[in-house]
Image 1 (cartoon, rainbow, N blue to C red):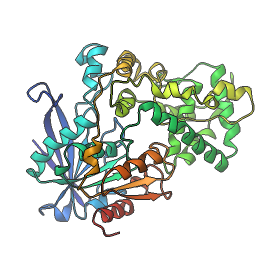
Image 2 (image 1 turned 60 degrees about the horizontal axis):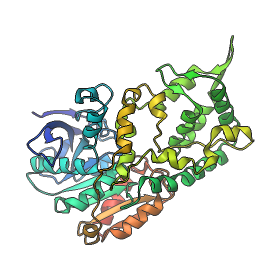
Image 3 (image 1 turned 180 degrees about the vertical axis):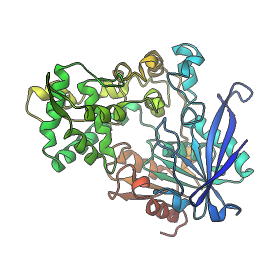
Length: 434
């Protein structure tokens, strides 16, 4: 049953769908998916083409816009009826978290369940939904970040379903193992940290002081998160966004207060830090993040943690023993997160089993992509912290007819920060108008 209602300038319809948990067993267990249809109020009764939006992540539900929103949605609504899909396990789509996963059984059963939450299953979900929503007509897909990874899987498995494909900051390597991804990532993150300190040189001493405090004290945030020096470093994930450097700067300047018991981390700092560090709202990001790169019999085996050892400059204790700047990290998942974060602690054994899994299957079909006929355009952000630019450009060359817009005007969140202009440019590229 669908429910329609209005916000300023738009008509929204909440839709629910039933799909197989395992698409190789279509008559087996099912799960429920949620998607929100959005159409401009003055076009509500028009027969419009459809655009399905695949959110970044993994682990995040689709955006909850108000009205036409301030990002890309307003541009899309000029010509499309938009479907904002909560990918399986996120938002209202049979959420997978510490509260729900025990319903599956123990860690082994939970890990088997989560193996069905990658791009291949998401695309097959989309195909069942498309037939119900459009009556079988093809649609346009817009994939942001991990949603772009899903879009490349879509082009690999069901290109006949797509009128066009638009990717923003999300062209994955077709064959890189997770080790390769992080081996490319750490130098990129180091460049982002250097740029931050060049902008805010006063933050060098502030970051060192906070890390030094954390090495000497056992700090537990109000939500139960154990704030270690490594956890503090992971706040560098902010540096991949358009406003992230500024947000990190303001967080650091508000770190300490004087108390009767001596200097302590301020309540304001702790409150903001726990919101940034907690995976309570998106645990799938931590659980299946490395699995999105797995395509063969090799386990991911905590790739980010293992590869980090190749870059000793990220070791906080070694840094503080000298006088160099503390390096932040970001866009990486580590086993210690499942000890620090109360939202992840019950899932530690499940994460270990996923990290050891060896039966992953390919997500992309290079041969099919090489003969692609779907109009595809992709925004590739110069020195994107989250998705390696070199990997993205290699994939762009491997997909027949794909047109790129390589820009340093935006960071990874360009589709949000650039809004209508980014989408307009990419849609024009799919139509040979640019």
